[in-house]
Every structure is written in C-alpha cells, then in structure tokens.
Image 1 (cartoon, protein in one colour):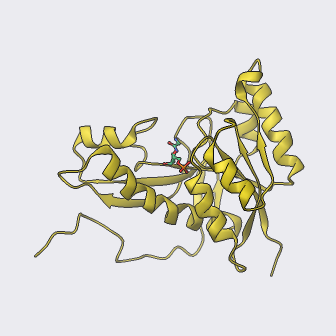
Image 2 (cartoon, protein in one colour):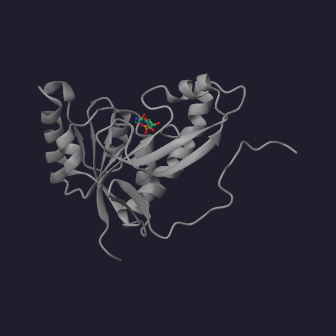
Image 3 (spheres, rainbow, N blue to C red):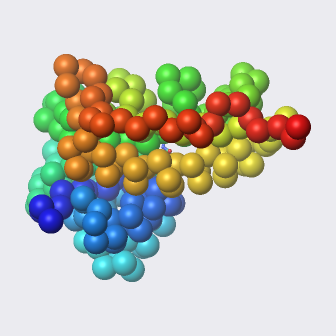
Length: 219
Ligand code: GAR
C-alpha cells in the first residue's frame, strides 16, 4: 500500500467529527492517518479524546496573538512539525487569514452542518427550521477565504420533521456528518477528489440511486 496521507485535525470543542475521522483512519486500508489534533480552546473535549487515543495534541490560544495571521502561523508551524499533508477542520471556529488559506489551497477541508450554500455561519439548525425547509444536512468543502464557502466535495441530506427542535435536527445531521467526513477524507487523501481551477473534481464518481431525495413517508 502507498504511504498514507498525514492529516492534522483542527477543533474548537466536542470533537465528535474528529473522533469519526479517527475511527476511520484506524482501518488499515484507509488512505490517511491523523498526525495531530490542535485546538484553540484548552478545554475542548476533543483534545482529551485525542490524547487518550495516543495522538499528539496541541493547544494554541488565539487570544495570545496580535493578529489572525500570527495565530495562523503558529498553527501552521505546529501542523508542519507533525508533517501534515492535509488539514481537516472539524468544528474549528476560527476564520483563517488569506495567506494561510492560499498556502493550503486544495489541502484543507471543512465540514459544515447545512446544505451549503444555505445557512452559513452559526445556528444552522435554527436557520433551517425558521426557513421551513423539508431537507437539511451537511456539506464538506475545500477551504477558501470566504467563510463556509469553497468548492463542495460531498453533501448528505436528512429530512426535517414537522416537530423537530434545533436539538433533534442537530442530532440527525450530526450522525450524517460522522459518515460524510470520513468519506470525504478518503476521497481527498486518495487523490480522487481534488481542487482544479477553483472547482472540485471527483474521479470515478458513483451514482447512488438510493441517495435521499425527499423525506420518507408511509404509503
Ligand atoms: C459540527 O456540527 C460541525 O459541522 C460544525 O461544528 C460542529 C462541531 O462538532 N462546524 C461548523 O459549524 C463550521 N462552520 P464536533 O466538535 O462534535 O465535531
């Protein structure tokens, strides 16, 4: 098997997507391995989980830096110490500087809890309920300078039920995220999904006729 890509995971909190990536990367045939987990928040639960799993971890407090670029440089030097080929943002709630994004163009991915370009930013489940959409979901994309923008890689849809609360919807989306992010990283790390002229190109895409189109209803 060819060398596995090394992935640094950036988090700010719970770290459940990081855990989903970790579970996937433990599989011997997976094309990537996690080389380190970095958080801007010391209390991020995900850091504890990563450390318990024996992964290198780092905490870099963004408040200790005079500028966004200076913080990003500190993040970058740690990620490079870990020899990372790719960066996966998993609930990392910081906006990157332009230089950092450009240096990692095509090598940095993110997951967002909505069907982008709908519902960027925070409180995406509240936004979806307020809009009254019947389908919601999650998206993975290459990171570009726009927040929650950047060429989409994969999306997963979930139905919105009439009695959903932000929490019930969030739980449904989160379990879709835990499937979507490992699939995305697999595609990117194996070179099957890449960024070309600002667009995502996926080689040998497979059409899945069972992909969800509308909420399932009883006959
Ligand atoms: C996830 O829902 C992720 O999609 C979201 O933060 C949550 C992190 O949860 N990311 C964004 O909103 C990025 N704009 P986790 O720490 O349990 O993975």
